[in-house]
Image (tube, rainbow, N blue to C red):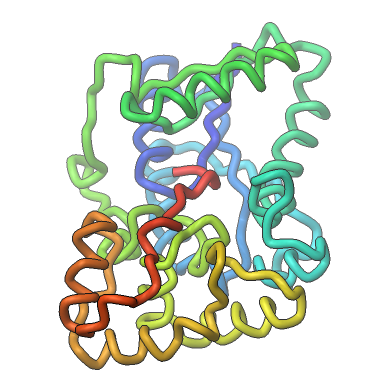
Length: 271
């Protein structure tokens, strides 16, 4: 039996890799990752996933989209002519989902009973677990969710001397900088910390004629973001959306400020 870990490079998937390796032995574990263009995937995420793999003494198995070295999520959106497809981010579909399905169909379609696929969803994400179970079961694959269902042996990689990715200091997830499924709060953080990505996002919106934040183009909110930044509003996703925007509105003293919190979304890329 092979235990295939969807190894995104985030903290949760790293914990899953450690739990699975401890339970079943490193020789029976496969870490499947999809390398992302360095303009989008923070260098410290790459550092983190390599350090955890080194600790486990397991080589990362990369299944990458052709052209990933040159194409970021905006290039993918332009190629697909959409930011989302059937409510899934087009970049997730091309950069991660399609390469993963090609891998399991190539390597495991003839021996589905010899593998289990592991995801990093926790007990607070039961709806995602249920959906993933159904989707994978339709194709004949068994899945497991150690962070939700197992008795845990580790809560943080700090316990083994590995610091989580630095991106967690501002963002909730270790996904691309400039996520199509991120809401207005996410894009304020991008505006403050990664202005070059914000600019490319605006250009891509203009080229496609679609907005990333539902009902509002980034070009429309840039003035508000500029004022918020210079008023000292912290660029963080760690404050609850309602609290974050209330504080922003209070400082801006504009009761009619666009109701951003209505359009906060949850990224589906992985954890």
